[in-house]
Length: 140
Image (cartoon, rainbow, N blue to C red):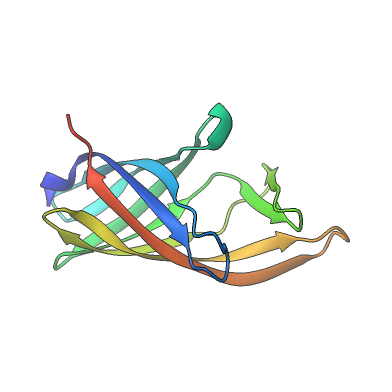
């Protein structure tokens, strides 16, 4: 599956119960597949207002036309009750699990993670957040 090596562009959405307007969030992904169909790479989230992209690493595998990998940020990203993003560089972000089906036109699938929400009182609430994703190979 080394044909998957290279730059991909894609988007993800959160399921409607987590984001009512079903906004698409965009990213670029660099995939590296070795001879054993082990996958590694980086994901750069595109952010509004020319903010620097957030970079996460990915590790996983390919098996019978399906891909499975974990996306990991080097720090914790939280949303507070005002929907503002809080960065805590002293803690790791929860793993984000991606599963997808590989086709001639790209890869698409679902993702999930155990997310934490920070409330004004300083307490955290944890819940499983889910959504969909898709990527297509970038033109070289």
